Amino acid sequence: MRIFIIAQVSVAVMVIFFISYTFFSFYKTAKSDAFLIGEKSVYEVGEKLNNFLLNALSVLNVTCDTVDFMVENKVSKDALEFYLVSMTEKYKKSNGSSFLRICGLIDGKFINESPEDFLPGVKSEPKAFGWYISAIRAGGAPVISFPYRDSVTGDLVISISRMLSDHVSVISTDISISDFQSYINDLTDNKSFGFIMDKNSFVVAHTSEDVFGKNILRDDDFSFDMKNLVGKIITSASSNRIGDCKLAFEDHIDGNDVMAFSMTVRDDWFVVMVIDSSRLFSKIQFNYVFNIVGFILLIAIIIYYCTQMFIGNLKLESKVEEQVAQMVTMQNSIIEELATLIESRDANTGEHVKNTRVYSLMIAKRMYVKKIYPDEVTKTFIRYLRNAAPLHDVGKITVPDSVLCKPGQLSDFEYEVMKNHTRIGGAIIRKIFKKSINTDAIRMAVEVAQYHHERWDGNGYPLGMREDEIPLSARILAVADCFDALVSQRCYKKSVPASVAFNMINAESGTHFDPMVVQVFMSLKSDVIAHLRKIGNEAALQDYDSDAPGEVRRGILDEVIPSHNLT
Image (cartoon, rainbow, N blue to C red; front, side, top):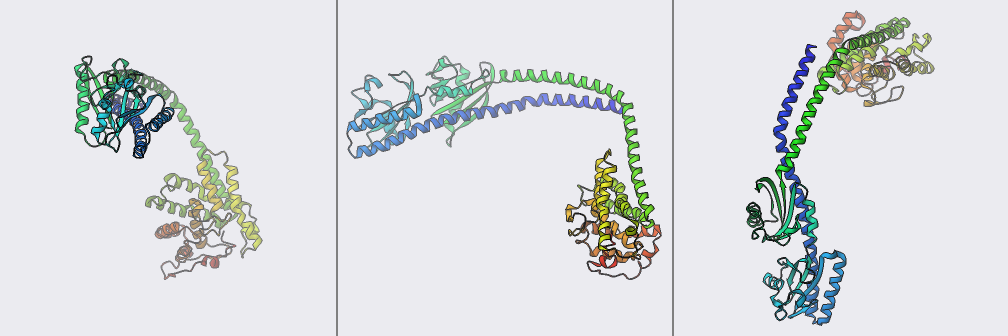
C-alpha cells in the first residue's frame, strides 16, 4: 500500500508538471501551426491566381502569333475581325464568364470593338488607350493593365496586351476579375480576412465587397495600421528581386494582434490573409483550460477508484497467484512423472533424460551470456527448455521392448517403428497438456519431442526440416542427445571416450547439427567433463587425458552408432 500511494503521488506530480509545461509550450506550438496553415492557404490562392493569369497569357500569345502571320500576309480587316471574334467565342466557352473579348489596334484601326463602348471620348485617338501605351512601352513583352471598370458590363476588368512584330499594332485580351472574389473565400472565416491587390495597393477582391476598387494606401477609409501593414508587404516585395515574394509576420491592427501572410504573383499582384491572433488563440486557450480541468477531474476519479480496487483486489490477487503456483507445480510434477515413466522402461534411458537436460541447459545458458540468437534465447527460453528436455523421448513409451531394448542393429521395419516415437511424443504432450496455462512452455516441449532428430542438412526425420526451419530448442537437444548417446553405454554399443565424442560432434557441424550450437557446445568442454566426473562416467573419461584423434571425418556417427540405433 505504501508503494502504491507513492506511485499515485508521483503520478500526480508528473501530471502537474505536464500541465504546466504544456500550458507554456502550447501557445508557441499553436502559433507555429497557425503560421504553417496561413502560409499554405495563401500559397494555394496565389497558385490559383497565377494559373488564371498564365491561361490568359497563353490565349494572348497564341492570338498574337496568328495575327502577326495574318498581317504579314496582308489579310483583310474583315478576316482579322472574323478571327478575333471567333477566338473570343472559343475562349468564352472554355473559360466562362471571366473571358470578355480579344481585340486590337492593327495598322491604326480598332478591331472587334467600338471605341465608344470601350473608352468614350477617345475615338479620334485610339492610341491613347492605356493598354496600348503599356504594350508599346513593354517592347513586345505581355503587360497587364491597371484594373478599370468596363464601360459596357461595369465589371472590374484588366487588359493583358502585347505589341506585334510591326511595332505599331497591339492585341489585347480583356478579362473580368470578378472571379477573384471566389479565391478570397478560401482565406476567409470568422477569425481572418483576405484580399487581392495590385502593386499600387488597388483592391480587386476582398472579404468585404464594399472595399472593391479602393486604394488602401490612398483611401482615407483605411486605418493607419492597415496602411502600414500593406506598406510593409509592398516594400518587401520591391526589395526581393528573385522569384515570388512570400511573407509572414506578426503585426497590430486597431489594437489587435494579427498574423499577416502575403504572396506576390507575377510581380503585379499580392494575395494577402490577415488572422486575428487574439480571437484565434482565446478560443483555443479556453478549450485547452476546459480540457485540462476535465482531465484533472478524470485523473482524480481514476485514482480514487483504482485505490479502492487495489485494496479490494489484494486478497483476490493473492489467491490467484496461489492457484497459479499450484497449477504450475502440478504441471511440472506431471513432466517429472512422465520422465520417471520413461526411466522405468530403460535404466540407461533414465540417466540419459537427466544428462540431456544438463547439457541442453549448459548450451542455452552460454548462448544467453554470449547473446547468441538473442531474440530467442531469453531467461524464459531457458526455463521452458529445462522442463521440456526430459520429455524429448516421451514417445518411446509406445515403442515395444523388443525394439527399444534390442542389443543388435534394428531392421528397416524396427527402425520405422522407432522413428515414430518423435511424432507420438509430440501428440502425447499435446494431448496431456492441451489445457495447460502455459502454452508457450508446452509448445517448446512438443518441438523438442517431435523435432530433435531433424538434421541441419534436411536428412533427418520426421519432416526432413533443414537449418532454421528446425526450432532452436530441438537443435540444442539434438547435440545434447547425441553426445550423451555417444558417451553412454547402451545395449547395442559401448561407451565412446569423451574426447572422441567431442570430435565426432564437431565433425558433424553443418550437416547433422547447427554449426552455432556445435560451436557453443565445444566451448563447454570443461563443464561437460566436470559433469561426467560428477556422475561417475569413468568409461567416457578414461582416455580424456590421453592423445585423442585430432580430426574425425563427417559421417563417422553412423559407423560408431548405426543410424538405425541413433535414436
